[in-house]
Length: 259
Image 1: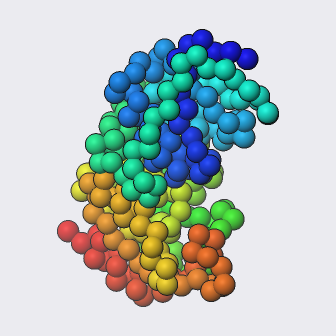
Image 2: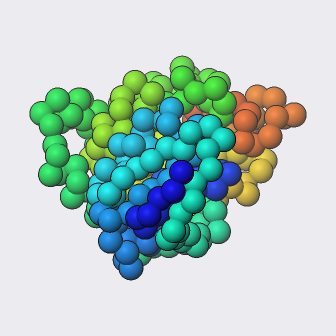
């Protein structure tokens, strides 16, 4: 098939994951919006992306002319194809781009707010723990042991998989204090107000994944962390479940929420 209108491609082999979609792919789209009229453009996405509803929801604030998912093995001839460069090496972030995305999403959500969304968001307050209990990897294995600690500091438990994208980002936007272990849920910290505070439960043995520290910096947030140990040391940092010391977490939370 042939596409005559201006066409844009923003994905790579990592973009199918939520963090990489939001921070790598959409940041390229945000950068492109500064020099191109997105309302006149067709965004092409790989076939497998059609199963992720959050992608279509998170694209609405950009006002694209069309979002087109390729068919399996489909070949397309584009007369005018735009390929924005990566804004930063993956795991790093451009502060101006992240702040423009924050503003874009905030304006879109304000303009399309629904009463149902507000009632759900208000349940979680401004101290939120994002649980990965429904994830298939990087869970807090002893989550039941840390929930009383979190509750004592006023945190409510939010399980992202139970809510659509709009609610997920609005819960993060309403939070002044956000806690989660290393994983996709922390990506929505970009919606938090500057000088809010985020705590990442991260691996004590392999401290190299610094993407959320970098994102907190780009989002102008105060960053805290609590170290955890993998249940199975043979698993890599990107897959292994972890155990968190409740006493250490308690001390870090006390510092985090202190005035």
